[in-house]
Length: 250
Image 1 (tube, rainbow, N blue to C red):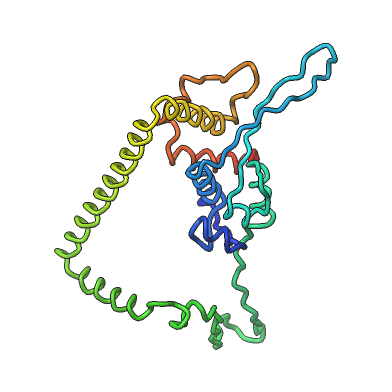
Image 2 (cartoon, rainbow, N blue to C red; image 1 turned 90 degrees about the vertical axis):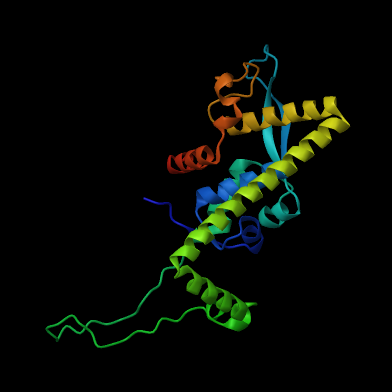
């Protein structure tokens, strides 16, 4: 069973995820990716008093999220935690899509259940009004050209090849940009850059593995497995977010 989509209630959240309707797991995944991309994670060390007066207070690391302008417009808070984000999504920002309700009467005096009434459904005028959609005529002409082109099998094959090559070129450009930025920052200050990189990777490791690992003085469990970068793929994140949502642990 596929997860059901929910309606987004806030324009600023629509701006972040790029959709009016979204599943809860996809919404969490996109928010996490946005926070990670903009380096908004903060790790704070706090002391918890011990119940035994003879023992020293224990230290714990708490991961918080520093809200930028967009996150502040969404959650209306300067600092957040993931449980607070989950609560806001569940109670304020997402809601089930309104169903279509049809009011009708059944004539029980007839022997057939077939009706003779045609019901017109009222739809949002913004969905069909060209004035509300900039470039609707241009989009229609482009769609017509694409339809005529796709009717030709050879054109369809050529289009698929071009799309594939375009995707590969975009990936190469993106990879080259990341590679250039990496070596540029490394050349400016190698020691500081590598230290920062190590701290960030360690912080992301603790955030993503916090469900099965502790932040106390005992250290991390199974660190050799989860320290690998190929362990945290997009598919892995999506599956585990769905798993945690379905089990009620998020």
